[in-house]
Image (cartoon, rainbow, N blue to C red; front, side):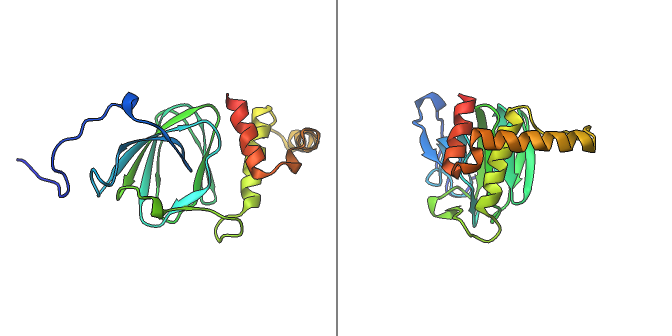
Length: 192
């Protein structure tokens, strides 16, 4: 049986090594298929070498599939560890961004196809998200990379001692005085 999908005139073959990467809120993107190719869906390959910019989409749903690297993805108020083989579905109107632990490569499948006007960068003071939350997430990632992350196995005494160490380190390193872009840059340098 031959089914013709509306909008498809013929097959498309693309080679990733011939596609020029562009900068985006999600990192460095290679657009594998676009709205012009097939309006119901699109596919991109994202290389993420530093924290991405918090954003959301009003219409499209995104499917992330990690095929290289590790890190964290923050979706709304939830934080998830992600690694090779992890798939995350992000529905419309959910603020999201990633903090890679190392350079990550992610396939991003969008339904309907991604379009620029649908990507809303989160500004300070917006409902459902705060810049304070992002600052805390970025500083927490720096603490984890400095081997000062909390674990479930720790006793309350160990957590209290570590908390004091963490506060001292934050002040010593000046992380509490850095802006969000400076914290993002610092995490990017940590990966390189």
